[in-house]
Length: 186
Image (tube, rainbow, N blue to C red):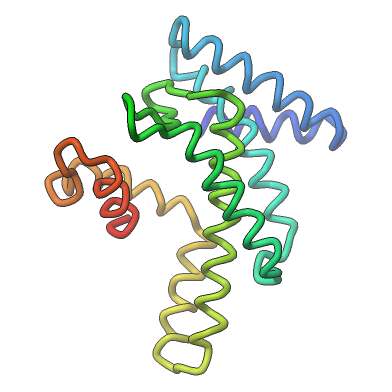
């Protein structure tokens, strides 16, 4: 994350918006190629492979994600399910995008899947917030969660919990149940 953020910040300072997105796409592709052939020191191949996510995160930072439409939510959900269907084939050897293990099934579809899934989760979160907006306890919980969400580096703690809680969410040879339990636990 550190090297990826440094590279992205430098590119953002030096390039126009149009050049930035093209550079991030090219460097992400280069990082994926290196990650599949030879891992680079200090995980620089991963730093390059995640540049497209940094670009999209920067794009999302400048948008108001609390304003959504049900049409957009359905579109993002359908795109996420469709791309997940292709990148996570349950009936064969399941594979999903995993940066640490340098797995990028059907690149760039796996990146579209990750971005669509993120947008869908943002939309569903907004629906839940709107539907439960009257509860005072819920408003307090939402304020706490919003504060944590704005400081999203805390999401790294989930990776620490993965090792500790593996016995809780792993179901032998059942990837759907494992995925559902892990999403709920995370």
